[in-house]
Amino acid sequence: QVQLVESGGGLVQAGGSLRLSCVASGSMFSINNMGWFRQAPGKQRELVALFSSGGTTNYGDSVKGRFTISRDNAKNTVFLQMNSLEPEDTAVYYCYARRRTYDYWGQGTQVTVSS
Image 1 (cartoon, one colour):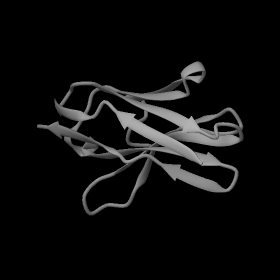
Image 2: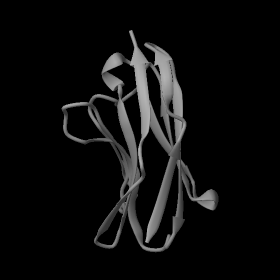
Image 3: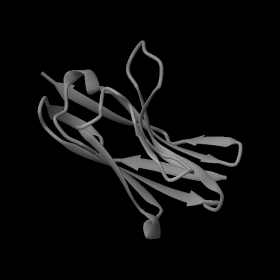
Image 4: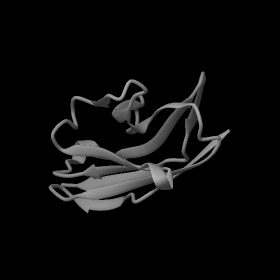
């Protein structure tokens, strides 16, 4: 089992910045992928940023150049730095981890960007 706890969401004006954090605990070995997804009202959950098992980092097209994923392995923490936020970035942001064949999700943190 892997537990994921997000923090850092909130309300921000367009053009502003936020930093999300996700602390992982539990069975940390054999985690293949870890990162962030988001889901806006009435839309499907979509990739934001992801560390993959092959050592690559993937970003959703709509956030490239504005968002940066990073991690602190010693603290089992993944961060998402979000700059130049737009109203279209408004969503619930979920931390994600894949361990072997199982997917784990955090409870989500709301990000609201006002115009």
